Length: 173
Image (tube, rainbow, N blue to C red; front, top):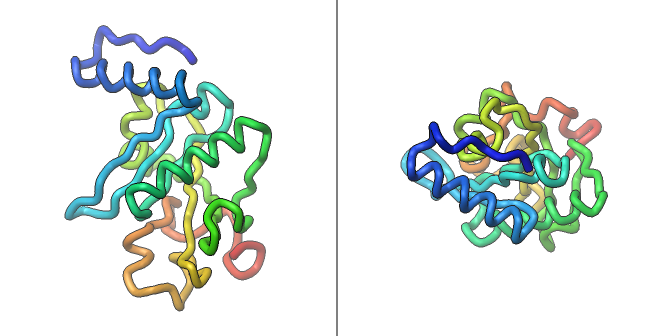
């Protein structure tokens, strides 16, 4: 991982980058959690997955607090060990009874959903994937029969707000 110049960072940013680097060295990545607020769902994202393992950083939105880090750690561990995840393909082996699909994150969402990662990648030059988790009934946010408000609770971070790397129901869930 490249060293980050800390002279221009605030004391709080320096503490955060030190924590991110410590987590990355100890665990292979850092997972940063952001709690829900009046503006939206809580989410968590990785930092250092790209720097350490050459796998895209990842974000998950709207999961219960304890589930997001577990999902992201599993993604980074599996990716670091050579597994390649395809966008638009449904994966049933992350959580029992809750399918997961990957989608590319549009760069316009990076500042909001990967803010602290800019301490690692100041130029914002890193790939990112969103792990979208279905309901136990297999409904994703873009499905017409998804629970009311599900698309607001777990927005899809593409430019359009719906999958763009595949066509739901055609070559993806």
